[in-house]
Amino acid sequence: MLTLYDAARCPYCARARIALAEKGVEFEALEIDLNDRPEWIYEKNPTGRVPVVEEDAWILPESSVIMEYLEERYPEPPLLPADPGDRALARVWIFRHDDFTKPYYALRRGEDGAAERFEEQLSKLDAALERQPWLSGGEYGLADIAYVPWVLRARDMLGVSFDELPAVRSWLDRLEQRPAIAREVDVVASL
Image (cartoon, one colour):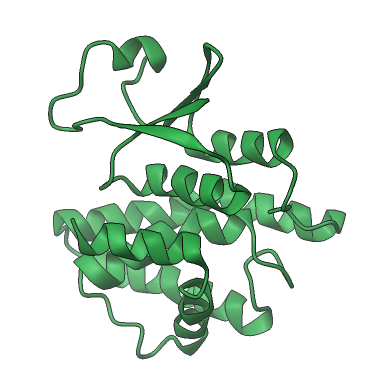
């Protein structure tokens, strides 16, 4: 059975949880206290970060790599589009994810100008979602999973309003209809 070294508060772990749920993969979650990481987690990932998946003594860290691994290891249902262009677009969104998360974390830390920088990133997300229903085009998938943990936390934990972002609001409404995302909304509410 697959083991997920997890932390409920971690949006990177949320990516792995959502992808596993979407794939219907049974797994055992082992919660890691991020304020008091056990020494052995550094044997699983030298950085000590989660998520990490382990399957049959094979270990893989890094959420974006874990999502790609799950897509290949468990191909049904597919979370990358069949169209090569849309698949590439999904990967571009995931590759550029740091552009979105850096201002999010700056906002969490209360840095000057962070709200404006994060608002700029949300506006870019909104513009993309005005053109297409999902980040990788016409189908829900890994790109959406890559972003939604931060968007949920921004809304529910940081009080970020999406009133001026109708495409993001609509995207979230569609996402929250998915059981895997609804479970993550419950996780965020419990933090």
